[in-house]
Length: 433
Image 1: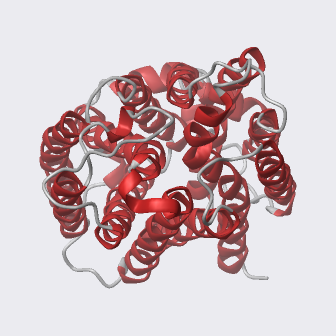
Image 2 (image 1 turned 180 degrees about the vertical axis):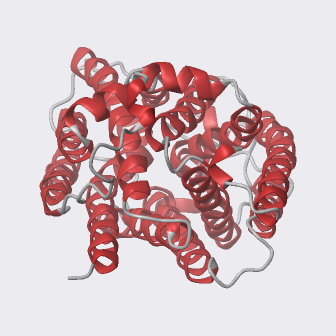
């Protein structure tokens, strides 16, 4: 196997492993609030939104130390240990209690920081300036395939059900736990890259501890500008992965299909993610215009989705009680429009995330672990804030926040890409920006 094919093999295994883990975790996140709403008539008194807020809050803080952890134990072992904690969090839902639910939320927050920092490091190690765009797209398409498989099961298993029984819950979460463990074990198939440095050559980035490098990088102009874009991805991540499915499940006008539509929505989000990741990955080497047109497409697609959701969904859908809501917005709630919006949310998300992965891997090829840690720090803290206010804000205010942050995030991404392209055209080292 040639070095290039070995690297591509590693990227494929990385993507497939994440596909299994996040088939379980994203399906869990998509249905958690609905399942918990059915549990709150028992001794369990947790909130899916609060759990996700804890996860992303701890996640953001843990990104300060995750580069040092990855540097100490290596990306492969870091991802394996993190995968174990993801599996334990999902297993909590088999027989949930309030204290285990929130305790697991803390531990998975720490594990998530290590997992995603190791992922960014592994992706960068197995890429160069010619393949980072392709590999980012391939990884993203495989990762987001997770939305398709888990939600397809939910759609068929919960079709026609208005109440999720204990047996239904246990069956789903036992299966999801096993799927997560399979993805975790697959990390061991990733082949280590040989050190390509000449004898005696030092790696200057290793002279500075990972957490200090993260702090140093976070104050550079480019990282500060990209942080606005990253903040937007955190807000819309919360919306499409947790809030929007809850909204669909709360609309009584959808009839007996409302619960199974949560799964169908996840499938359409996944189709958008896979389509976007695949296309942008394949076209990355042929594009003469850089990353900006893809990000522009992403924000336009999202703004269309936000408008359609605004006119289609009741304003109280995110905070509706277990009985749901009989309200309507500016039109009679349409299942077709709701599913089309799911597709647009996924497509727009893939536009932003594939390009952020690509530009970070390109800009900071020699400092990938701290750069990706900052990316996940900003994204996760914004996701935590969004999950917190999702407990209280009506739908229109959540949409307005995303429109404002998304607009400015697009402009700041353009600024970084223009400067990078200008320096590259003059023959400067891209990573020296």
